[in-house]
Image (cartoon, rainbow, N blue to C red; front, side, top):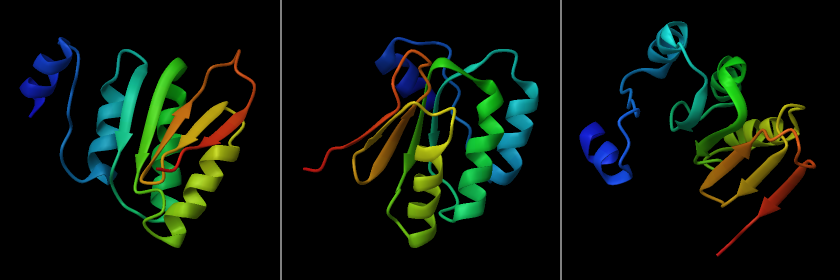
Length: 118
């Protein structure tokens, strides 16, 4: 999968990490030597773990980072986690696509939330 993604995007700096996120995320973050440009979260669909993954990654984000959360309406707890993330002071822009939520941190951006439903 990794090589297909890298090839399709013409990028050689993509790392796909598969495994239990409760173990792989802290290990991966501890090894990082750069900031996170893009993170896609499709993991435990409960409030506490989702918020923890988000907060664990916050120190590694930069102005142009993008975080994507899958299944934001999967359960009441995921919806609560999405609401928490949207309101977080470091988040400046969110886009709700119903099945996923996009999160941006651009300091020059006025805080806004968009909902696009098809």
